Amino acid sequence: MNPDPEVARLAALKSYRVLDTPPEDVFDEITARAAALFDAPISLVSLVDDHRQWFKSRQGLEACSTSREVAFCAHALQLEPHGVLIVEDSAKDPRFAQNPLAIDEPFVKFYVGAVLTSDDGHNLGTLCVIDNKPRPRPDQNLVEQLKILASLVVARLE
Image (cartoon, rainbow, N blue to C red):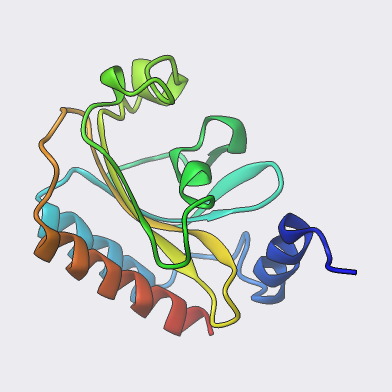
């Protein structure tokens, strides 16, 4: 009998023993590079457990976690491995138009999250960039560069 995919995903995430650990320069360098690449004010390495998204690294955001139920990154977990969730304008996206993170601080309007997929195929979270202004869809080259940075996050976790 196959285990529940979410149970397996959470077990994979916990096996890394990274949740609630101190910041590390290697992850901070990756989020800084992602923010610069997109000229975005916020970039995060977000790991999604059963009740929250927790930020292993964050640029431009004070909070170290948010509840999973409002996490944009939690929506990205449903994508195929190594997928990318793009939200050009949260106010025009029915999934996020009433989201507290979109209508209040930090006013997430634009979001691009590259899924962090483990070597065994579990989506753990995202490397994401966020802006408080809507933006057009980024070009595919930029998206591919974010995916490369996301693969560096996973390589470091592995």
